[in-house]
Amino acid sequence: MPIQTLPEPVERQFALAGFDLDAFVRSTLAEDLGTAGDITSTAVIPAEARFAGVMDSRDAIVVAGLPIAEAFFRALDPAVRIERLVQDGDRVAAGTDLMRLEGSARAMLTAERSALNTVQHLSGIATLTRSYVDRILGTGATLLDTRKTIPGLRLLEKYATRMGGATNHRMGLWDAAMIKDNHVAVAGGVGEAVRRAKAAGIRRIIVEVDSIDQIEPALAAGATHLLLDNMDPPMLRGAVTLVGGRVPTEASGGVRLETIRAIAETGVTFISVGRLTQSAPAADIGLDFAALG
Image (tube, rainbow, N blue to C red):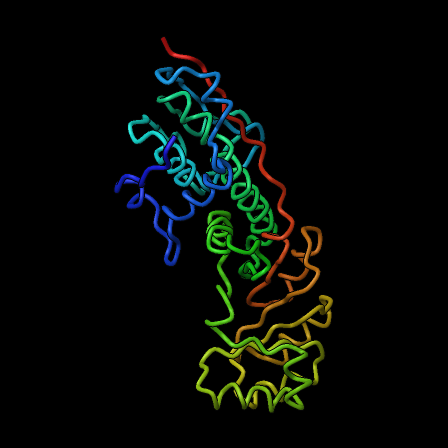
């Protein structure tokens, strides 16, 4: 079964800056098909057979990835009929139908695992993210994601955190300076590291500080954002008071669901959580088919 070019409407329905949907679908299917293709479906399912299918969630989740799942099915059967019943970002109850499909049985079975893997992974991230967002409602703090993503999936995983209500932090090493302890050690101090970044023409300079006495040198040198690393709530509160709103503050390091509320109540601007993409369990989503005719 050939991997076909995606129809134009699919690409218009889902667009992420820097993300090539067609290439992602092709490479993912190619990994599964190898050089022989879906030998099971080809042997067992008649070429003319048609299926109707329903994708549904077995748990309460926040949905993410449905347009990508649709692209997998359309890649193998451009004539497939698909009805999305919910949208990415929706919070749905257990037992909710997410998508209905009707088309080539072989194509559906071949695309099924790639489509489900994607939706399960991204919905798992979105669901975990929403649980963190819910914990800090009303505090004024904003939840951020991190660069702790699976290589090659950063754009999709960060898309999923947005569907869960988080705000994307750095997309990569290129969009802001992040001065950490190793940079400071080589530069000879926080102030010197910041001055070098500023001299290089970098406008966004985030500085990780793990002690109160690093704050003033970082600010004096031109830091535009302070990452308060592994500080407990009393220490965070003191740091926020000292900064006095001169730059945004970000709490980071070891943040968990049971601790994030107390962290948010210290007055920090942001809280970054690597677990959103690093530790989210896959959502329990299934796809059931029935033969037509």
